[in-house]
Length: 522
Figure 1 (cartoon, rainbow, N blue to C red):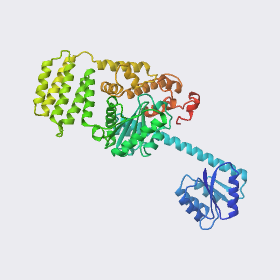
Figure 2 (figure 1 turned 180 degrees about the horizontal axis):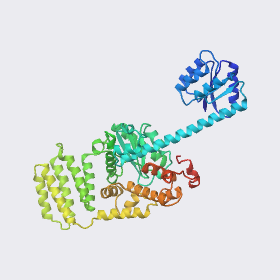
Figure 3 (figure 1 turned 180 degrees about the vertical axis):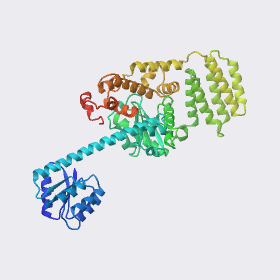
Figure 4 (figure 1 turned 135 degrees about the horizontal axis):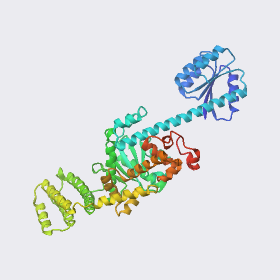
């Protein structure tokens, strides 16, 4: 619907213009004003798309009205109607960016042609504006993707130039990492972003990372509110898509440069899926608002992690989890010494039982000594000493961990055109998905989903540079059956669409399946 204002001091003229407008097959909301002063008051109260005005009127003539009106809304289209055909009026009107100048009495066919031309101009401008906004949105998403994946604020500013104000992200306080066990986002409609922001609140920032992960960034971090939003997102996805979503929550984010750290912490939290699969929301221990986990159950989680580290001969992981256990008790005075010694003695038993030649006598001596010590540091030193012994016992041969990660990487290299879920990859090497994610990142420096996306994007770039394959064929070749999602992912990664990357050209309409044409941004 278009809003149009007719300004003329003669009522019969206003009625005549209304009649002509209603003969045009366009939906209008029409208002009238009898002079320039009244028209200006209306313009201050609401926005109009088009203003049709006479020149000769009391209080304020048409040219004065247009001059003041364009100060209020420079995009409004203005048309002059007058019985005066003097050239000077027309020239002055055109200097005010008037669309056209028509003499009274108005000729119906010329009037209809003019109005349709104005509507066409407005529609064209609207499309251009939408394309520009989409372009800025893509640049913004690329900048945010870079910040989450380790680029410095200075690098991102340099890449985006004046197009992105990094200050837009300064209010981010909390990060929610959304994760699925299989490809989800590549098969979901493009409108998913809008849906999630409606559930979470329009002031949130949403970014897809890969087919299995997205992040939701919020401007507040009150634990109860964040948990409510996370649960609402989970419920919405279950009800709408019948899929289980897991969310790891990290806050407080104090500055934009800490986004990568928050993302890494969220990934670490997501490993809890292996130990606590019944839960769908994971908070750091200090922020956990679930409220139903005792300190003992937290210990059980760490003990399970360390058992897995020992089984996989992952000494680095064992040391990391042991340090977390120690940090928990190092400055605590409200735990029973007997309980702490019980926990650490069980860890010693696990370490001894994994050595090729278990010395039960030495184990019993160590446990007896552990129960007799009077300070926590001595207990830590005893366990660390035995972790050193365990590492020596494992020897210098290639670890199981390294071999299995190499197997996963090789599988990705050979099957990147197929669906690759963390669950399926984990099953191929007989590991839990969350644990595979943990050790894969430790071995390669990045999570599996990012590794897969990086490899696919580089393969896509190679194909764009070295082949004449259609965009849709390249999309399928690198594992993206939805070409619109492929284009979106390529933009996020490289900051430019695959169409423009290939010689700055546009996608050929024949390249895209009919059902996906409307989904691809210009």
